[in-house]
Image (cartoon, rainbow, N blue to C red; front, side, top):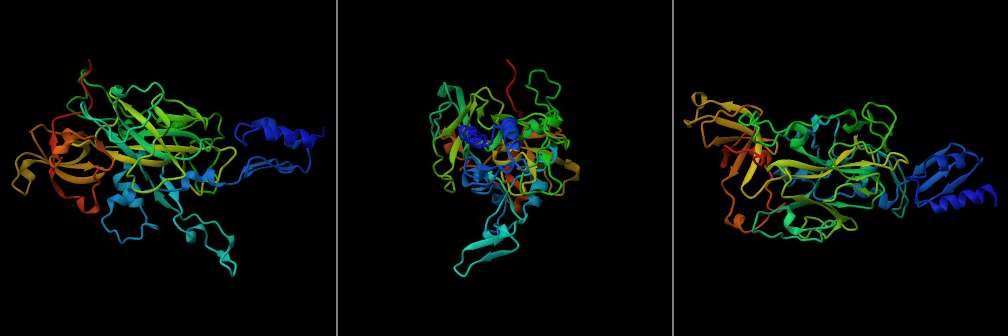
Length: 432
């Protein structure tokens, strides 16, 4: 058997480039002029020792976008949301992302004009030439979720993870995904894990579960390309060549492109009925929330991070960080949300004749004015519990889903919110 035939058989035995590593590199380099293809889109060439994963449809599932969470903050439905600049919302309402230095949301292309600054077509309208351009828009796919109390049943059931015992769980989050093998890591981001849960009244009380800010080591920080390129880089946050794998902040759900790392993960769950858009051919992944979990803190942001396989590189279309924020949502309950105090206006400084201090609280990152039930002196920087006075009677009997979740709008910023009331409560339970 000749060398080329031997390599052909080795290539045929491999499932794409991922995992082939140095063995394939060594074999390819020994034969001058060798050019070969592996799975559709995967390409090797000996003269330049090139190993590349050219994009195929299944590889690019993360660029297939659904129901942008960022749009929900805006009132003007006539705005051009296919080309909208959401950077202001990200800096004002989601500044906690800055704690994870360099983390950015997914960027997507919403029309053909974004593909290129120079598109050439035949007289029959067939595309035959285009230049790539870095002009995608920020997009956070809306994450579905459901939370329920004792005595309530879930509205959107599924088979659950391995060893599923329904009574062990109090909710789940769910998000659309494509095939495994493209994302090295899929991870869960919790806002209060990044920021901690500062609350002056209990910070020195040993009866309460501590929630300290995360210790973000270099191996958990995103890598950034100073000028975003069409392929992800193969460096860590320090700019050094990757010495390991699975670099990513948060609770890892998938590692090494295929391996499930959490027993609460349902790899492929039932589809989320009533989701705002059709996600097919994508499917749904579900992470189940146990009754013993301290997730979510009502009102915090929960996100899904995805880190693409860097070698061989898959086209990722000028993303700005690796990993990037792929999906997420603000998660409240029927009756409760929370926010961070940014301004305390003492009673003597109030101009509205109100009693007690008035608090400016950032809820969903939107600054609103809230009255308190008591005269405790809440501090700037405290995360405080907020009672939603307009919750409906169905809250006692029906689970709370992403369809019930309201999102504060641009018009709410700076407004007094009579339907919110700051209450002397903190999350989570007293230790037992």
